[in-house]
Length: 364
Image (cartoon, rainbow, N blue to C red; front, side):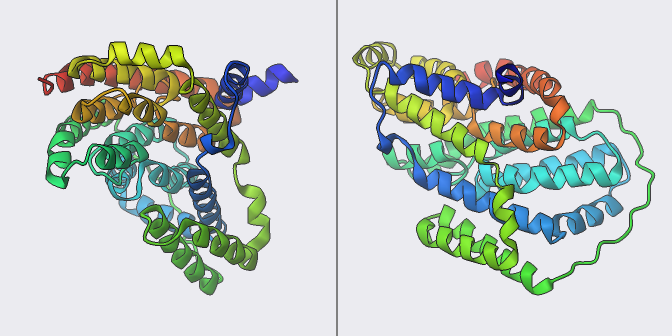
């Protein structure tokens, strides 16, 4: 039973294992857990579940399918939407929104959607690199190093340009199969509930940008969902939230170890070193914790910014946003988890091999 659990919940198992092991060395503290991130994820998963139950995503999928006649066109639309959306609503939100949408498209069109979901994940991580609000590590670096907006965008623009080329090539080599099918139109029912859900979604997005207090958004979300359909509370992927908690405790524990502090100070005394080591750390502890860890020992903000965004590719935990799409996909296609990880790793390692040397040329 334990073996089956580990096989089906690989990332969760790793997170819990790392948290437990490091807790024997350093005492865990409640403040290590970023409850704001957990609450925002909870809110977003709930509202997307509501949109799904009200057939809003299904309606959108039908509209998209009617305009797309080939597999490549479907890929371009889904990956492109995720890439652009991630710049403004964060990579996490983009994946929580568009991966379920892609799965619905796949089911409606009777097409294999795995590679598209993986490319959506790559697109979300690369697209979110462009703006300060694109992902948590960008916001942190933007504030911590007091970067100007133009300086920030000029630094990340090469990642975006290279990302568009990279994704374009990966989509371009796909088989351009024609999609020949008919779909029945979806009628939206309970329109008033849909309007409430859309309004709720906008409030949650505002809470992501700190325009609306996230605690207020949380209370409002729970109340609204109970009005719409309280059963949706059971559709939240709580294992994903536990995965995040595990990683928060792990990074909090290791950041208190003196040996780690001394080691980090010795290896981060240059721009290129900060760049390379930040990418390596991202592969092991994910790019958000790596950002917070490295920032305390390095004055090279631009190099760190480039590194943790490039470093979002690679392993499944390099960007915790990647865990989101993996969890959403394997929840629908439980038997394809191992295959997903293999293809995901191939695409992301290819991305690292291409991006690392090219982006390093920007570092003096």
